Length: 125
Image 1 (cartoon, rainbow, N blue to C red):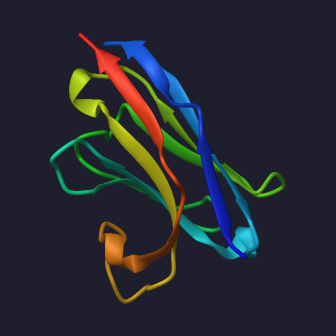
Image 2 (tube, rainbow, N blue to C red):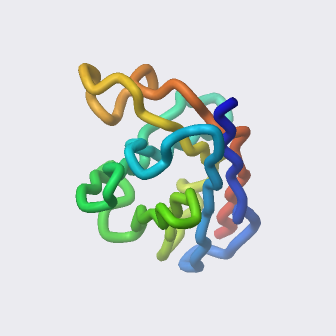
């Protein structure tokens, strides 16, 4: 079955960096469009970034543009989220997901079918 496993979260001071990883199995990874979402306590899950199967196309939420970079290594079945210049408002549980519904915009959680368990990112001020 499809499994997505995130890692790399932790506690970091504002202005610091973290790199999240999402290891995938049970799917044809090189053709899978992938996305990162996050959810803070009491808030809805929100889109962070998305990437095409080849890695040639990427898309970001305005709130992270210029600070976060999504990438992938299809040889390792892994997608990454490099997060720089972190802010306290970036604190959330971060999830990776596989996009299956191309009829919905990439920012919609409903466009994704498989999700990881999430990894906590906490940014202190």
